[in-house]
Amino acid sequence: MIAARTLSTTQNGMTLLELLLVVTILSAVAFMSLATVTDNTSQVRYDDTRNRIEAVKLAVIGDPNRTINGEPEVRGFVADMGRLPNNLQELINREYCSNPQYPDSGSCTAATETWTSLPAYAYDAATGIWSGWNGPYLAASPDSDYAKYRDGWGNDDGSNDFGWNFALNADALELQSLGLDNATGGSDYEADYPPAGYETVVYQNDYRTLITDSKTPTQNNDGTGGLSIDFGAPVPCWRCSDGISVNRSTCESSGNSWSTDTTITDNATCIAAPGQWQPSESICMRITYRSNGALSTYVSSGLTGNHTLTWNGTVQTARFTFEDTTTPFDEDTYLPMGQMAYRVFEYDTGTNTCTPNEYPKGSDWRLFTLVPKTAIQPLKWAVN
Image 1: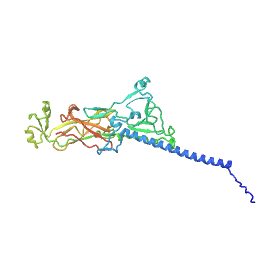
Image 2: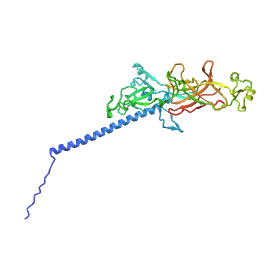
Image 3: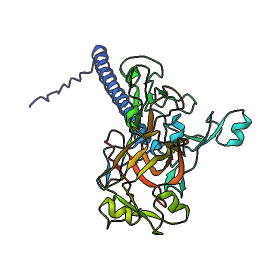
Image 4: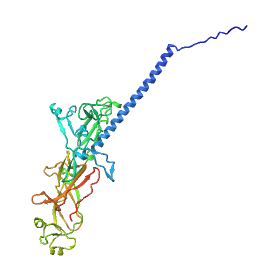
């Protein structure tokens, strides 16, 4: 008879020490995972802040690298308004309160705050220029009763700059985020971005062009620079449509037209016609440009050397300067980026003024676009 065998099963469990060791390892892994997630989140917010700063720059001056039909695309707040924005709110809303918690003019003024209304985008039939606020220029997210444009960290101080450090300094725009801790200074993700000394987003030469360098007490370059106009090669013999008058003032005062005669190529024949050979003309130039959402005008202070050109049959290219001569050692003269218009007028040498009489008679405003950091080609103005 075979005896039954007894099977013995041994069941081993984890000791308390082993259990504590496993918990410790799992906690360490979880902590490292959490730190990695936190760092990734912080990096995303940092990158978002950087991208938002770039978006502000594009909203102000557009993208100079984009072209339309081979020409640089000129767009943005400056191209419409002729100036830099006074705060970030102006890139989002045409009308706003100095305290953005008041969304309408009634509640704003009732709270003794200031309500700002920028000029609306409008067309000027005389010059053909559109000007005024044509936003929004930034895509902001709605937040309570009004839209905000905060940094990647979500900082907000209740102002029209939404928690950013915003400043206009020496005709340049500065913008800075205070980082994760929303406080000045710091390191890593708590550091200000961009760091101190690198806050400038839009520089002077990004949005405007010097057209006349004013004189200073230490140099003699009064009125240098300017804008050139190519008048072409006007015929040297000028005649009146009445066939009698021999000078322009007498001709036009009688309602006749004063123009060139391409069939005459010598002095004697021109005078006998009767006509005037190689007459001189005193002229000036006006530029109409955008300024604070409306249109303003610069009047030339003269041609290079004087106001007079002689139509001698050769190509006439004149450079007009635009220095403000009413104030000694005045500031340099700049034009903002964007579309503007120009026109030539008669200059009265007796009173030293640019008259409202266009030259030639019947000529109208002509448009041109100013792109910063690019050479300004001579403007065309045919006189024949």
